[in-house]
Length: 619
Ligand code: ATP
Ligand code: MG
Image (cartoon, rainbow, N blue to C red):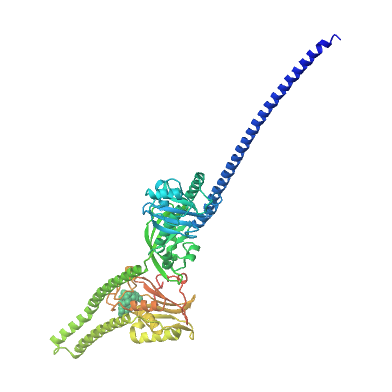
């Protein structure tokens, strides 16, 4: 029972310990609760923060998405209006934008253009240009150069202060939000949205969003305006080039890569044909090589005559002269030539006609002087004879025996005859020249015809014909050719009479007419006096006589008639001769058919006859 006095004390101690523990437990619990409350508060705060961050993130993402799509649409090649319409739709994803317009400001003219205008009260789509700038809401944004958020109260205040005096449209909006747009570094327009709905009030953060969108619109609008300016400038150049009075061509890699409509008219081919062909295709063959050489030299940067004339052949086969100016340029990043062409056909033809007239004038003058020198020379001898005979008769008539008197009279008659024949000859060629010769071929038996001609000649030239030894080579009888008898008579008759006349000492006279290599060959060769070399080129001119004719009479007209007759029959004539040895005249005529003469190729012309025509002297 010794432990009994200690028990209450122990109990009391236990009681105290219990109470202490209790108090400690409560304190711990209170602390724990306080900690939990603060953790909850922190968690709630954090949750709110995260939610706000997520909303911000989402907003920024949708802003980014919209901006990206605006840029994408701007590059998609839409028309300006379609682009603005799409932009408006995208804006609607960010803000209430049922009513939206864009205006562009022309500072120079002090006007506004409204390329886009959608408003539920003012009208669905109202586009307007050149609206004079008035002191309204849009002008307020442009003037202040800042976003303007306007509700009914602020609007009244602005009106009261005189900031806004000329606002137009339906002004019963709930909020109106306009932001300026920067174009090329200056205020160039405004983007505006407005709401008539009671529940929609724009805020400052909406103003920030609209300002961002306006920024993206601005750069797209700048691009559209630049492209538009380029198009307008291209349009202006195109109008100038397409209506230019000259043909404009760009040649690159020896092809036409550009041509204006006038070019097609000048060259006489459709433009699409010209652009699909090498540029040489329409050139006259005689000018093509020079044109190509000049083009290449120009491209190599070598000096080339910048202005010259050349010929082209039109689709209808006409030859046209063009005057050309050319310059080297760069076309689509490569070397090219820019050419300006004008139709110079009329001018060149006028120049050619003038040259021909001048040439004819010169020839006529030469002919006149040759005629005067021929007549003064050829008439002098018969006139001297007449004069001498008349003097003889006048002074000695009564003393002269009858036969001498007869001789004097005969001499006078002969001289007069000679002069008359010469005048007749001159008259004949005068007529021939006044009425140009015509070729009317008919079927002719060549052998028969030549035989008749020889007979005619003999009857005209009489004994002179017997001076020479004739060698005649004709085709077999019965062979017919289409020939103009009058022309052949002139040709062969004159050549034969010359051969006889200019063979005063006789010799062989060879005459041949034959068909060879698809053409007719007439050769008249003699062993007469021959023709000095310096005279040979001029023999075919009227009144021209070689320097060695001596007393042999003539007017110098026969060969000019021959030349014209040969040309009229579409043939050629050539001569080879040596003084003292003889002469050989060769005439080549094409074979004619009912359709006309066959071509006379140069290559098939017979070689000139060997000189002298006859090696040995006549027997
Ligand atoms: P005509 O008008 O009477 O014929 P022409 O004989 O003098 O006069 P052309 O027949 O035109 O005139 O000949 C021109 C010139 O050519 C002659 O004057 C002569 O000098 C030269 N000629 C022409 N044929 C011959 C020939 N066969 N031999 C030498 N000279 C010739
Ligand atoms: Mg003659």
